[in-house]
Amino acid sequence: MNISVNYDDTDVAKALSKIIKDPNAEQFVKLLTPMLCSSSQGADHFFKLMIGNKLPEVIPNGTYCKVKLSNISYGIDKELTAKQYADEDNRIICTVQEFRGYHEYSQYVITYKCIATSGTEKLDTTYVRDTELEIVEDF
Image 1 (cartoon, one colour):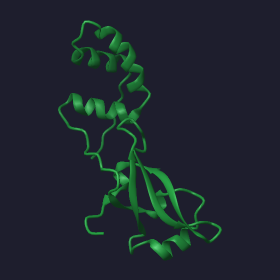
Image 2 (image 1 turned 30 degrees about the horizontal axis):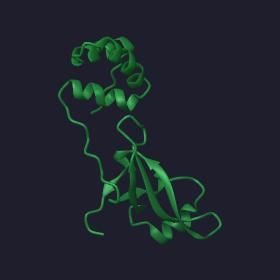
Image 3 (image 1 turned 45 degrees about the horizontal axis):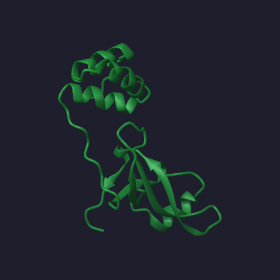
């Protein structure tokens, strides 16, 4: 079950001031508060860390994963791509190219084979969230 909690910049600043123990702490709080507040993903991870949770594991570059066809970029022929590359659950194989950071809404850059709207096969790139990826063990 997910719940929603609202925090504002003063809550973030108070939390940061509790964990930053440096002679220049006030300046660090001024710097980091707007950075965290501008990223809902970053703020979510920050408060989870504050209550003792850990960050999700980073999927290494080059890892093969499956992603639902509905979660990939526009400009492809999804019907032909599904026929050519998708499994019975309408997922295709992709490769993690880059982890963009915990603060990003879509944390990963992936590449995958698809059929362009012109009908030609191509290798395309898009951004996806960590929750949209399933690591493929045997590929």
